[in-house]
Length: 68
Image 1: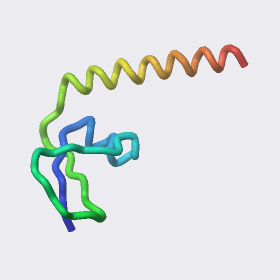
Image 2: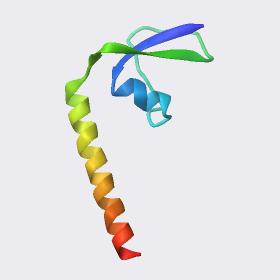
Image 3: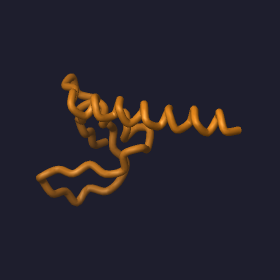
């Protein structure tokens, strides 16, 4: 089984099916199932962006709930 180490929050997004693509500089012919390893490192810039995105979605959901 192949394993791919990915920083958070991307590892979680891939595992949840919210991130479909992961690009690398090296080529591979491998196709099939892989394991996702959440590495020790955290992409802090991406975490900030994700937090902002989640807040926007929550605001939109609250508006929809209030309309109903």
